[in-house]
Amino acid sequence: MKNFTNYKEYDKKENLKIGSKVVHGAVGHDPFTGSVSFPIFQTATFRFRALEDSFGYDYTRLQNPTVEELERTLAMLENGTHALALSSGMAAVMCAFSLLKRGDHLISSDDIYGGTYEIAKTELKERGVETSFVDLSDFELFKESIKENTKMIFIESPTNPTMKVADIAEICKIAKEKGIIVVVDNTLLTPYYQKPLNLGADIVIHSGTKYLEGHNDTMAGFVITNKEEYFTPMRAFLTYQGACLAPLNAWLTLRGIKTLEVRMQRHNENALKVAEFLQNHPKVTKVYYTGLKDHKDYATTMKQSTGFGGLLSFEVDTKETALKVLEKVNMIIFAGSLGGVESLICYPVVVTHHEVPEEERLKLGINDRLLRLSVGIEDAEDIINDLAQALE
Image 1 (cartoon, rainbow, N blue to C red):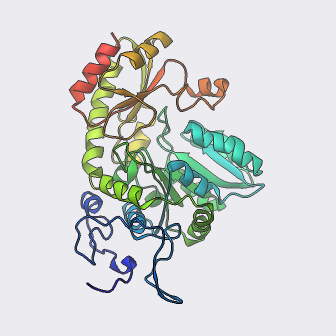
Image 2: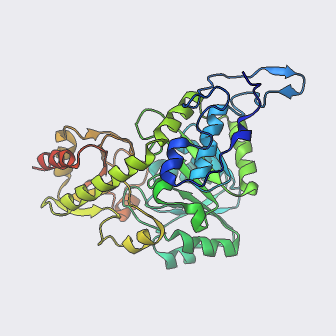
Image 3: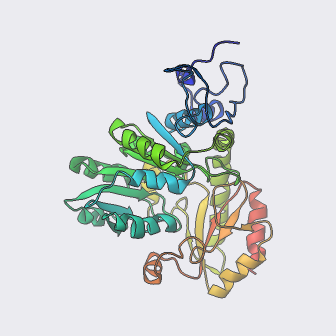
């Protein structure tokens, strides 16, 4: 067997399309044994040859070959140069927010995941960071929100759950002029449908638990950038906070990514059919899905994305109808995540946005009649039939 050196020497250079890149990854196979499946290096520590002479690895909190392959793959898919794999999406959010210091001002999408909202309202506030929650799909409102001490713009696009779309490229132009860091949460579209770094963003984050892993069976988070000045302090944050990704979870995510293209295409295809069905149902008063041509941000979506993803929300006529749907669905699962192969439905007012004060929730359209549906890859007719009987 060849002497073990370092996987960093085996980066791929082929100019492949994304459908091939997701299958093969950055290195993909094990160059030392020929294993087609990249190995799980299930170890906490690594042996030294001698003092100051290692095999390239010391301790899994610092680096691990399986985790590094996943990081290389995410950097490749997002067209970045550096990536960090973390234990969850929230760990990735905290890693990006570690760049903020006392006295800084953060502009965030207003309709944002409830956990991220809570971090801004508690942890960042205690650190002396001010946050403005802004409808970033309103470009003029965004420009008015910039202050002298604005350090970061945190964009969810589309947002969760009301699917607002920000013009990432235009926001980045303004931010670059003022030296403001732009972070984009790309969880809902993935690099298959949207590449924020290509649009001018500085940092991309993901909850890898969702579409990237895709099977509702592990947790992961990612931070990707092409700027060393942001990567270095975030790498230090990960090292000392200890929110590293376990090797087994890294391998599960690598395996999930192999089918990203086919899954995202099916999610997209199914979600459009489901959205059109819901639009025509008498008990549904509003459908939020960026793939519908009457969506207010459809033009922006077409400008910067190549697809619409599998998440949608819909508002029904009464609270009673909403609760009945949650009770009556059969194949569709009432659960609080998204992005897996199974269709999941949830009640944002209780499940994902309970931290947001009622007045602010209602202003965003997150009321007791709103349901969020993560459309899976089952047969679209079965999904629609399940919703139809639940809405009867």
